[in-house]
Image: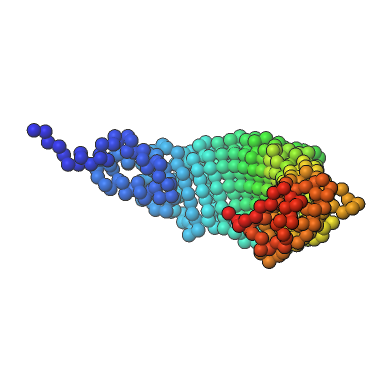
Length: 457
């Protein structure tokens, strides 16, 4: 008679050890460490399986000396991911100093966050090469006035050629590193004023030809450089800038490729006019040509313009209460190919300002007005007077999302005037119902091919 052990009847015991050891690799990294430790206490065989899997012991936080020693031993020669939260301070006997001398060459990713002095102490010890390092994030707590941690030029011996992601926040650096040939993502946030010049940024961009994502939040230089130096960001997919100084100091020297998304936000009230946040010549913004859609969002404090088309996207937001600036800015561009215009929650000043903005849009087919606070203005701007040409002659669809406290009037008069000129609207759509619109649907139907209305879905 054959005897069968009871534990062999458990389905999980039928999984081959080499497959069982792979399972934690697919778990969420945030909780994986504790879960793997739990697995090593299930039974002796499981302990051997998971302890021998070196890749499961590569995430360090150096919070405990014994744990650090065990992880160093079990991870063997595998690349390691080091996360250091220094907000509680560090001491000369801190476990981190057990790792730095022995494992810098094994670093795959490094995250450092802490007080100014502690960040400086740790980074000063990182002078050995890190040939495997792919991700580097250094975040200091908000610095004291005129004081921020300074990253040494000897960081990892000045060689970060394997790096793919670099994020720096509240640190002082002059970006002296070269040969960033593998870098694809750069984020500089709250870099102290004057820490990085336009020339240093351009040098850095030239050394990183495969950059795809760039985020500069309060990290743009205040002044440009002399001459016509241009640097191409040929692989760029998105650039996100928040600044309280004109972005043109940097953008004057960058070639932004077609297909890229450029977002510029000025976060200071009454900051520089919109035109100062774009380069003096738009020829180097290849993503800014032939845009077919425009979204305006003028309100009491922020003025914004979003351009999009087959070559990319440009979004500019300015913190300012002068609503007329958005229409002055729009008038500087060729909008003849614009097919779709959205005005979102706007404080529109006058019929004349909007009329001048709409007049060049010969190809406009859809106009959407979303909760504008002066809803009569855009309706009146579409109504041709006796001495004027028909505005937006190809307009086919007018979409209204009425503001709950504003009534829209003049729609029938506008539609009738356009129909009399042979420019009959095909579709008039009201989203949100008829309660905020003063019109007779049957009367409007005489001048519009299709009238639609209903609640927001």
